Image (cartoon, rainbow over all chains, first blue to last red; front, side, top):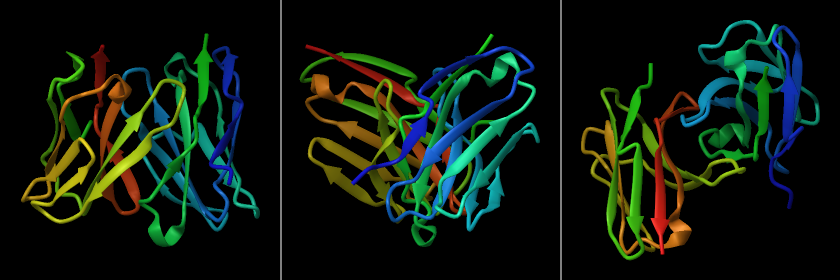
Length: 113
Length: 109
């Protein structure tokens, strides 16, 4: 039973570029949440998707956007990259009914130069 | 603003020692979770505590939720090298997690 899979695992971008990160949830899960984890810190909530809609959003600018597809997979898009966007981006999936029981992926490590 | 502060930030101990990690907040949470994260991996859920004053044990790990549901502690007895990792507490609020600042534990043989 595959858990949460994320791609790519690592990527390097330059300031001003745009990036798309992808996430496939654990089999049977219908809700996807995205977190940003800066080096040496705890993850911070970006947003949550359920039924292809953004349901909750953390304190992140509009440069951060997302999408959920009918198969429950999700994408995180970040526009106009800043150096401070360098971080590990974690995707977590859950069942809406038990949305605080999360399974995390291994993350996508983004470096902005 | 980090709602959950963990202490200590770093901990380096010898195998066999005991340790306690603290997670403190001025806010009340409906429940609190503890995770362990190893390099190159996502956080893995260890436990969820729900009731104020609740104590849960997971082998050598003991978790306690404060009576007022604002703070928690994790105690590890007789630490092993396999306990090495980043320990994160997370408060549950309206179906999202508010993570703490993290405690990086290194256990030496």
